[in-house]
Amino acid sequence: MTRHAPALTTEQTDLQDMLSAVVADAGHLPADEHPADIAVLRRRLAELGVWTLGATMDGDPAGDELAAIAFARLGRSWAALAWASVQAHAAVDVVGDSELSAAIRAGDSAVAVLDQSSAVVHMTARDGWLSGRIDRLDPAGERPHVILLGEGSARVIPAEALRFEPLRRTGLDGALTVSAETTEAVREADVTRAGVDTTAARIRLRLGAAAIAAGIADAAAEAALSYSAQREQFGAPLTALPTVRDALFLSSGAATTALRQVLRPRDCSAWQAAAVLDSLCEQAIDTCALAVQSHGGYGYLAEYPVERLLRDAVSLRAAADVAGARRAAASELAGHPRTDSGKDRT
Image (tube, rainbow, N blue to C red; front, side, top):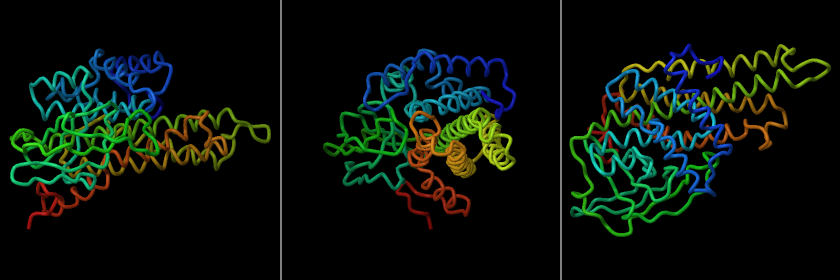
């Protein structure tokens, strides 16, 4: 990875190098204007065994570490695809052994996974029928299946039951961000899966998004270091200035802290995963902002990567519903677990 990461094992280094080669071979960033290219990249990552790597090695701590390596590395260059991969990891755990699971693992079917208590979810169940809308999905694929996580159960809404409308957003180009609305009510019994470990799915989503944020921060800190070492002012590189060195230390220190948290995952509760996600998303935004400042006016130009990284960090915070995760975690921490409706139990 970079100077910010802890020492990696041979297997982790090989995975990182493989992903770097895939990014280099693609030669371009995923873009909403080219959804077919995004599908190709999704399938390419699936062919390499990366798309749902952690789920494939379920129960193996090494698998979680490898998945974190993959999310962080993809986050540096393809944050939209990294977030889609995180959602695919969570989805296959929910849908189990099924045709949909196989399609997701192969990268053939896009999927979006959300907490059904999220503020963007407006679904109503009435007389056994489910209908409504979802304000935002970031699936990095056209016509995604949607999975809504409840408490011990999940609703798996097929793409054919939904109508999608594209949405504008700040970053995450290639996420193919959309809103969704049911075309007609669906039978709740047909889309509900009981006995699902939704807590594990939430933890996977939150730690996966945190790993992406760490990767974004890593890339921004590295870009700031590189630019400051090359850019000369008054006959010397910017790094000759103590104030610049202090700013670089702050951004690199944040990236180092973030990577050490996510590349050495440990068992944690859902509220702890939310705390890691909240902290790392804020660190990523702050680190990217410092990187933009280190470039001066050039930091706002698309020719330099730091402006994209800042936009990705801001959009990741929204896509991962950090605010919702924080609210749910606060309720859990205070001893008020939430119901499927998102209300605190009294």
